[in-house]
Image 1 (spheres, rainbow, N blue to C red):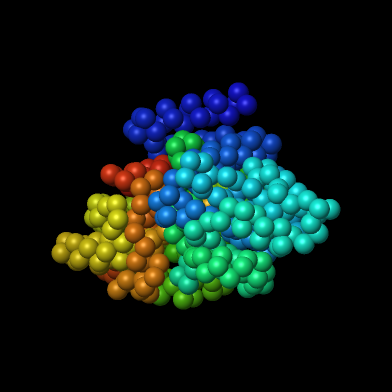
Image 2 (image 1 turned 30 degrees about the vertical axis):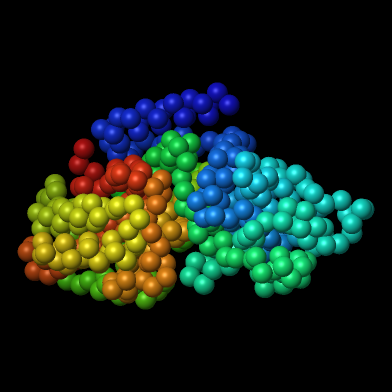
Length: 448
């Protein structure tokens, strides 16, 4: 535990001294052993259950929240509430939160105690689990019984048809009429980041940035030999070597003066193309890891120097600066209670007024890569995203600032797409990058 406390101190120091952020990507950050990871994650979960649940239930006017899952068919919200050593639920797992106005009771109707939940079911006294669940609900007589059903958000739609049927049938007619959607409650739980989590999130992003930087270097890439698929699979092996996980297969591609691998149409994202990386190429990486239950999502770029070059062409450097300017325009539009669609529309309007050809497709980040919360554009829906784009922005949420700017490069006599993605945290008043952002291209080979 001393190591964990020291890690908290070190990352807190970095957060309070932002000038230190994103200064080095060639130092491998510390990665905790599995046992210590579980301790940290359980501390976070218990804190969230004790503090976030009452706040969110009262915000949404819900006095009972029920989550149900069966082993290997888990509600994604329920999975985030289990102990770190539980890889899945056990048999049928029913979790119940009940707010009596003073405290929020936390209990389970399950065959076993579940970490932070004490079971209320004794199979010897009542063999029928669902009958016992109905008794638990009737004893508390809630005004609303919220369950995870949602038309727009898959992460908030976790109860299966079968489990919903059992739940409904276990209640009398009066209680059945009180069933409501827990959509906003489920999203609120998933999207809200605590102070504890945000103390460590910079380190998680730093790990991802270290891996990205190593892959986009001469340690991995030999121009004229190494292919984009070689680099993709190097990333997969590196992630496994560090005892981490990824939530998607890395994407590595190139743009060069004589052709364009990026037309702005991402429908062929999973195409099995491979290019030999050559001098003069602009390399793009899309990369994410999972660590301590939190995800990252990063897109960065590297330039492969031609013989005699010591820096990238000015046109490419200016293109990146335009991408950074688009980031600034976009993040300046983050305001509490604005919807994703409102932020998208105003950002695109301001970008156009500055002559920036922009595409914005930003998403929340946290427990999941494409996480719960407001969707701010999709690459093929720049007019707004019905449903998920209508959800409002809340404080204490993390977002993957994902976008691109199409910029003309004079040296190439053509346009390139500067595709960027950096994770950021919105505290309700302002937004900050969790571990800095790319403001200069990586160079292969490194020049310092």
